[in-house]
Length: 410
Ligand code: GAL
Image 1: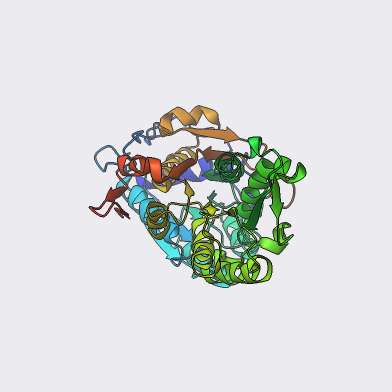
Image 2: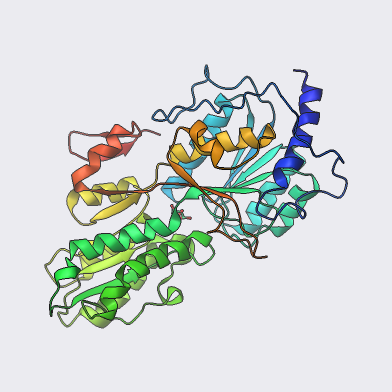
């Protein structure tokens, strides 16, 4: 198909697709949007996102014939391990499917992310895939996207501005729930009898919309045991604001954990569990427990992401579990969704079989600041412990060395 015709079809298709995005569409469509809003009956872009279920890397041979177009991929930071993986997979997948890409990392600085996105728009991107540093801070950049009728996929973290079109993530509430449930099982709280176990909590970045979902899922799982006295937060620090970790920073989590340990546990009080929302914070907490906790019992410590240093701690027994999110699969779903949007297909659960990856279409759980529901594709997270590390190796995304430690393959 001639590029010009494809371009015209894409722009019509984008209007149609945006019309059912997070903001309900009206805000997203530009004032001078083309009048015709019907999606083309047929385009030469194949409807099927030919992405294999297990093999997360799109095969260049299987890829759609150059759907064409330029994709701006805006990631938050390289200082947290997972985003390096996300950026690399997204870049690889989109390129293999025939797209041009621009990949940026914004060093966890919101102004820089706004700038990076504005540069992408000036560079003529056809779509934006954004993992926001701060879900509330991208208004200026996204107004620009809406004016140019550029669809935006909120990647992993919800953008709260209505110009975002769709959301691809993991079930964030379930991530927290798995962490909380793990602690309930590990301490056998159902059979605690008169015994009381002591716990502390470290949550994530208040600017990251996911952080409260992780926190709430975990709290809901342990709340019955806080209520019946089987669990006790010795520091009394439970509210999200009291336990949050700006920027998900390891050092911040370490500093607070050291304070808590010296203020509440130096007298020999036993610490049984530390609920951490992710691996970067778990790393700090584990370090504090290893160096500053006087007790000799094993402290159950949770995490999320499967960062290499944390997987090593799991092998060594200093961290107990992590909730693993296969971000290669997240990029496969994102690519398939992007293709569907650009092809003007209707975006709903009927797309899921073409992803070849287990996920749910959820139109209720995520809202923008204006209270509009954001249609979301949510993948399934998994618990990883010392006992099932082989599951990670089986994804092909990690290898296990002779020492039993795992290394990521990208
Ligand atoms: C969250 C993300 C987690 C974790 C955290 C810190 O938004 O969903 O997987 O990585 O940020 O980067």
